[in-house]
Image 1 (spheres, rainbow, N blue to C red):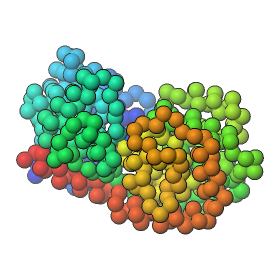
Image 2 (cartoon, one colour):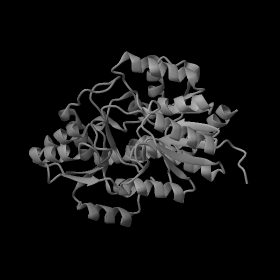
Image 3 (tube, helix red, strand yellow):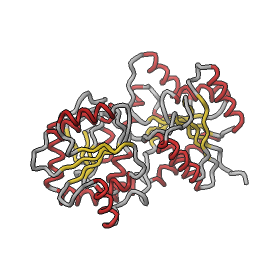
Image 4 (cartoon, helix red, strand yellow):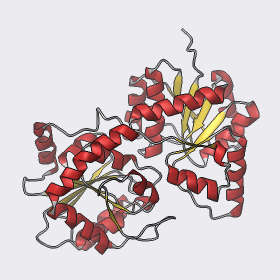
Length: 385
C-alpha cells in the first residue's frame, strides 16, 4: 500500500559513529514506525566495510529502513553526480534531507538540478577558512526551503555567520530514546562494572565520543593526570577515530594507564553509561550533544565545558560546567579546571546524583525521540507540498 506521506531520504556521508548519523537513522526509523516510506542513503566514497558500520546498516534494515549506497565524491565529480542523479530518478523521493558537510551543498546541487525538494541540517556551528565557502553556504541556505538547526545556539550562529534569513531556520532538537537510555537495574549495573574492571570503591567516568580533535580528549587526559592520588576516579573512553594511537601514547606518557582504558567503538553505550558514576565531556564545540542527553537520561552527573549549546540544555547544576563561556570553537581547555570539576562531582557524589535524577524528567520533556521525529515529519510535509 502506498503511503500518503512523501517518500523521505535521509542522506549521510558514512555510517561511522556520530551524532549526525545517529539522528538520521532515528528519524528514518521513527518515520517508518509511523508508516512513512523512509530510506537511508550513504553518499560517500565507499560502501560500509567495517564491522561497526555494517552493524549500523544491519540495525537500520532490522528497524524497517532500507539502506542504499551511491559512490559519491562530490557534485563536481561527473561520475558521482550522474550516479546520484540516476538513484534520485529511480526512487523519486518527495524530500531529501542531508546531514553532513560537504555532502549538504553537493547533494543539494544535484537535487536542485532535478527539482527534487532538498533540505539540510546544521549539526555544528561551523567556521570558514575561506570567504568563498561562506558565500557558498549563504547561497545554499537561501536556495532551499528550510535549514534545520539542532539547537538555538546553532541557529543563532547560522543566522549570523552564514547570513541565512531567520524565517528559513527551523530548530529541531536532537532526541533520544528514553526507553533505551534509563537507569539500569542493580544486577545489570554490577555486571557492566565488573566487565570494565571497576570495583565498588571506584568512581567510574565514561566518555563516549569519536577520538577526534573536536572532542578534546587530550585535555581530559591532562586533567586526569592532575587528579590527586586519593581520587577514586577511573575512566573508560568509548569510541575510535584518527587520534586513537596518539591519545593512547599520551596516556602512557602521563602515567595514567592505571586510571584510563580505551574501549574502541562500542554498540553497548547504554550499558556503559549504566555502569558509570559520571560522564565527562571536554569537547571544543558541540551543536546539541546526544551523548550528554543520553548520560543525563541515565541520571549520570555530567562535567562539560561552558559552550552555548551545553548551557542551553543545562538545568539546576547539571551539567557541572567548567571554564569560561566560549562563543566560538575553543582553542584549549584548562586541565586544572576540568580536574576541579571532576573532583567536585566525586567528592559530593550524593548531591551530584540528586541533581542528575531531576535532570531525567527535563530531558524527557524537551529532548525525546518522539518530539524530534514529530518536528521532522511536520517539516517534511510542508516541504513536500
